[in-house]
Length: 94
Image 1 (spheres, rainbow, N blue to C red):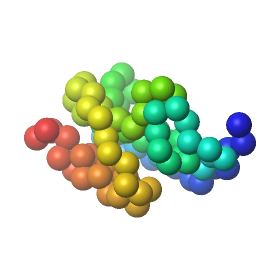
Image 2: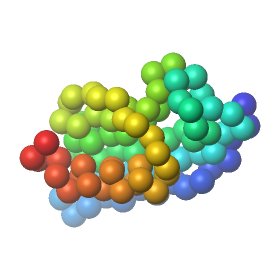
Image 3: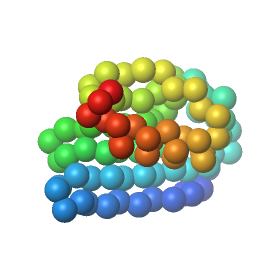
Image 4: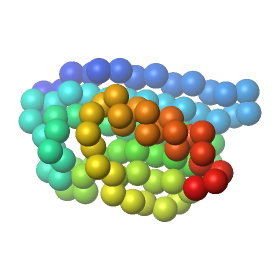
């Protein structure tokens, strides 16, 4: 399957937290998703995630916050980024 990298960024904060965003555009949707994007967004420490959004083949769009996995309804890449950032800001309260 052909994939075009849309973006990849990785930042390590002064407190050691890692924020990594990777997204590709695909020729066709993966099984479990209705859109043509493959993505994984991570926020956490080297020894554990705090927030992660991804869409695995067959599993579809979902997120992990504080070790709890829930389905995620994908609307657009912009909203996905906004929701990820909001969960990072609020992860300790979720």
